[in-house]
Length: 276
Image (tube, rainbow, N blue to C red; front, side):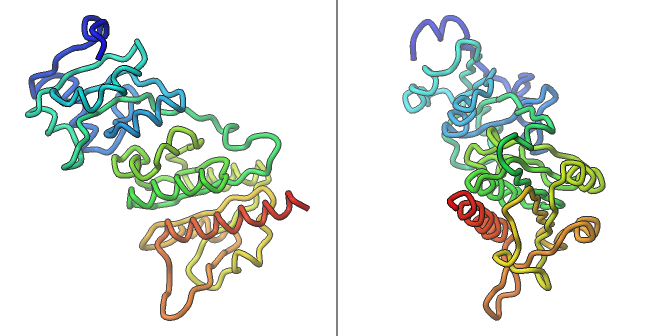
């Protein structure tokens, strides 16, 4: 690590009661942003994804002694980033995993506007996630949404935070690139989609239309409900039902798997239309 960086912004964090250590521990417990709107990142890849997406990373903490393994990352940090060397005893109280890479960072929360979800030049594809509680499922769906060309995601109230550590890991960086609005009531989401003339579909376990039989090429949104209860009634009443046909005796798919199947079908239909 260059000596100039050590002389200018390199600091030591040795006490459990340091304000920054307290902030990180609160973020670990809550799975939420800190008061300044910062996101906790816990791997080299997460930090690199954030920086590669143009997200500011004002603070980095690393376990003292891990410098050789983290040298390239530390050298490539922006000059504005403040780096803390944290004692091993304190560092182990700041992570959510037992096999930490020895790095933590606070990155600026991505800020998206409504219009970011509805880009010009292509029909919007919006995912609506309503009531999901498993952060791994949420993160996996966000990753699939980006992979299959979704233009944005709306997170209804009572849905787990995308800033939960497990959710962030599962997104594989999609959190920093995919426009997301969260904390919206169902009625507001339905009204927004109607105002934008976006057709609403709802994924249900049974008695819906098979995705290949539906026209999924125009402006549309697809609702995925909670793992236990499915989509809330307000969305079911407002949208056309979609059901993935399954072989017996399987009755349903994991919500993340169901989202990937439907997103793939949408991508295939849109690809076919664009090639005509």
